[in-house]
Length: 207
Ligand code: SAH
Image (cartoon, rainbow, N blue to C red; front, side, top):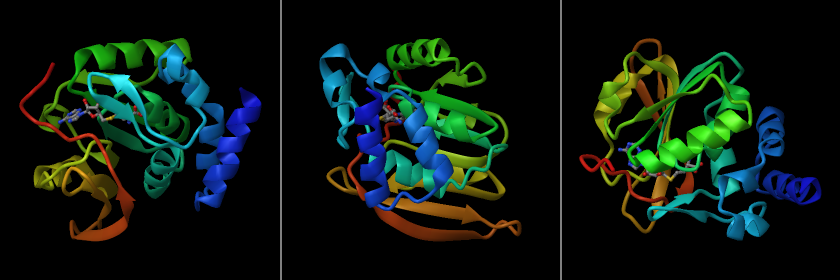
């Protein structure tokens, strides 16, 4: 597996992932353990894979690109919306101080929790909810891994001054990945950091 995983890291470098810490995190997390046995063979290809319940684990290059944009240095408080398989949570846990991850589908959350605990990621808080207002406090970095057709503006309240938010926004077939930076003054700066297709961000339908 190591050898194939190294191939993925080479592919990520070619696709513009330049952060050494992000590349190390991508090399450290065994993606094959976050997908079903039948799909393990493809775990280190740069493709999205089904994880059940109509959801997918994103392409490694998309995850690396989004996580790189969070600019984590090791001590940040991070909120992830859309735990899915838990793979991206593991990458973030490698790079941040603390992580709260939220998922609307309980079975996916439970499966992610058990894989992450087995791998030794002990400090993650798991929340079964589709409503980020249920999570108290604000975070240095917020990442949404489902595509929102309309930007949920209340999410800016979850971002601490000086923090950033990464969220895919747009129509179902293609989303723009947006990066919002909340300045100390509270002003918001918006950047467009790329395009990808995501499963939909859904509110009002927990399972
Ligand atoms: N980062 C994940 C990708 C998961 S796909 C991984 O590495 O596997 C996106 C996930 O977002 C899906 O599991 C979906 O159920 C979840 N989701 C969609 N809308 C949500 C919401 N409002 N709150 C929490 N989770 C949500």
